Length: 304
Image (cartoon, rainbow, N blue to C red; front, top):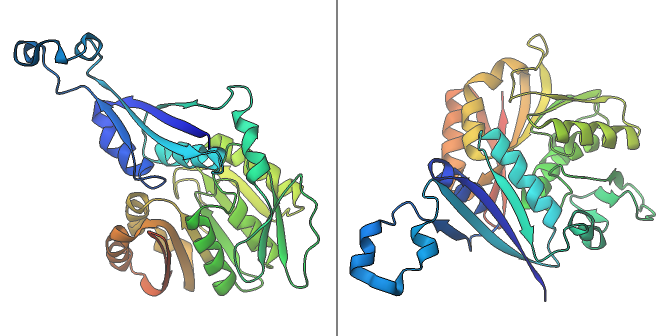
């Protein structure tokens, strides 16, 4: 089996944030951090320390994980880019073990129609698919935006969307990525969906996906969390598939955007942080009404 090394270069000051985000994909991280190497170690360990290590830039770190060829490399990288951007992390990503010209498209042969709820099915743009009775289809070309339906956080959020959304709901989608959740909301009968992402590339991809799926009631725009959201609107359903720390940062501000009785679906939460998110949302005036888990991930549903 072939493996690909996903390697992220960052500053030493941002190492903890990078490792926390990358561990959401794979816990077997390889970290190259030379900040604690001192020249005087030569006198203790002699030639056991390679000269290249002693001369390495101590302000720069590298964090890597390895994915087998059957895993979705593009989805993993899009996830990292979205989370790094949300956390304000400066980074460089390289991929080794895959042909440089082909890696961005190589994942397509592993991306097949995927059922992610009772009725919801994600179908690649290039795949032929005949839906079964009552299935709701969204066709996706995720490009470099996170959200193909393969990640646990997306599946958990989509299942709760299917459970709680009613026809005619007005939907707010924070951290939309590829736009997949808003597209499903449209297909399930929402009146409109306003989708936002901090990454302009994700917004472009989401708008392209909305056009391709003939969902004109889905509008995607750039925003840092709620900053660009119309303050006069009161949404009857909202969703945010982003990491726990960002959900906690958003918690004090989200209630004024929700109608009375509206639901907020929060995903992208490592199980260990679910209590922190619940506490923050409660302090923001929202009540936990539902939850679910897959692997180490949780989705939480709050009501205004």
